[in-house]
Each structure stands twice: as structure tokens, then as C-alpha cells.
Image (tube, rainbow, N blue to C red; front, side):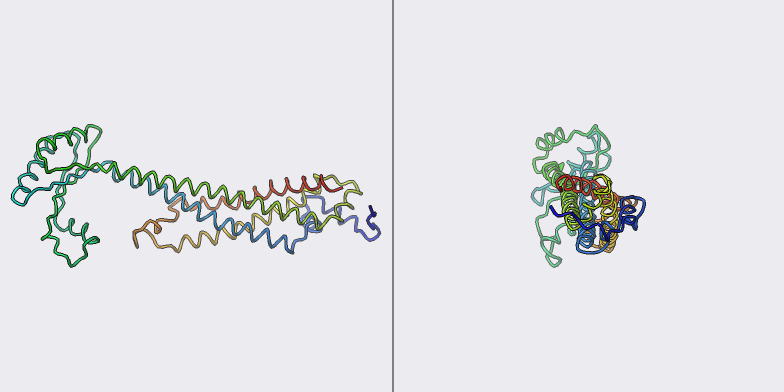
Length: 309
């Protein structure tokens, strides 16, 4: 193996580059510009940008599941279907029965305008709803744990055959399960983003080490240890990862901030965002990215330095 030419080496600058506290010296070992620097900044920024949206998705689906669970858990609906000449009598019988049922805080029959608003998305605004055989709907709000939905259902079947009780269990549980799975998907996405970012950091560090193989050999000749050499790369790449992630996080938060609010459109995607103190969670992303860059670069640098003769 050909020995390196040591005549034109700036020994003092190289030694200062091994000291972690000397930022300018570290730059002599790890080039501050070039392909690896751009790759590290771009990767960290892109991963942080995606992480902001994955975090927002996870938090939004969690709020959605909680909202569905709380709003529907205490609500029961009774549908009264009967011929026109008997529907008033059966509705009155149901209302009288509900007054005697424990655990009910409020029982009210939905007025005509609310029924029309419920049916307008299906039939359109020009359809005469009052001419359709629309059943009567009675909304019940529970007051506590005394309410027995199954007992009320059996009593309705026996005394008012045209009344059907719906406690929303059959379709509420699948919706909540779907929201919880979406939240889990967001958490898994965050893990995949962190893993992909760590892989890119490791590749960039290995590329930088390979490009500075001659300098590493010289440093070893003057007594530098592999751990000391690796520290210079770890410091530089950790700073790059943190800076790129900070820029990506701010861009992601700006993108979340310009989304319409739930009160403006009322859809699921309009609830994709952060509320109150939740805006502090994305600020942890640059810190996590810097930590990922630190460990990934340290592992890659030490692994490659052991392989370099």
C-alpha cells in the first residue's frame, strides 16, 4: 500500500478538526458543502415535513374516535313506523313509556324541520318530505348507568310493535375501530419515517467517510483514534439533520395551519391539525431528527472506520 504524502499536511488544522468543540476544525474533516451536505439537509427536511402530517393524522383520528364515542355513547334513537291513522297513538304510547323508564335524562321527538334536514342530502331540497311516509324519530339522552337499552327494546316489541330502538352500537363500534386503526397507521408511519431518515443519514455519513479516506489515514498516523474521528462526522451530521428537520417542520406546520377549520367545511380532512398545546408536539421532531442523525451517523462511522485499513 502506498504511503500518503505528509509533506503538505497542515498538522495543526487537522488536529483541531478532531476536537468536537472546534466547529471550524470539524469542517476541515467533514466538508460543509457538497453532495452529502445537500443530501442530509434535504432528507431531514423532507422526513420532518412528512412526520408533521403523520403526527397530525394520528392526533386527528384520535380526536375523531373520542368525539364519536362520546357523542353517540349516551344517545339512543327510537323509530316509530305505523300507518297514518295509528302513528300518533303509537308515538304517544312510546313517549308515555319513556317517562316511566329509569335512566333517561331527556326524550324528545324530532320536529319536522330536523327530519327534513336529515333527509335533504338523500332526496334533495325540492322533494316534498311531508308527502313521504317518514317514520317518527324520538331521541333519547341517557342520564347515567341505570338505563337498560335491552329491557326497553323488549318492552317496545311487546307493547308497541311499530317502534324500533337503535342504540347505534352496530355502526358506532366499526367507526371507532376504523379511527383507532388510522391513528395506529399514523404512529407506524412516524416509525417508518424515522427509520428511512436514519438509513439516509448512515449512507450520507459513509459516503463522506469514503470521500475523506486519505485524510483519515493521515489522522491515524498522528495518533487519532477512530472514536475521535467519528465524533467530527457525528457533530457535523447531527447539526445538518437538526437544521434540515427544523426547516421541514416549520414548513409542515405552515401547511397544517392553512388547512380549513372544522367549522368552515365540517369534513374529516378539515379536522387534520393541531389544537391548543398540540402545536408544541411538532417542535419535538427536530430534536428527534437530531438524535436519529447522531446515533445513525455514529454507528455508520464507527462501522466503516473499523473496515478501513
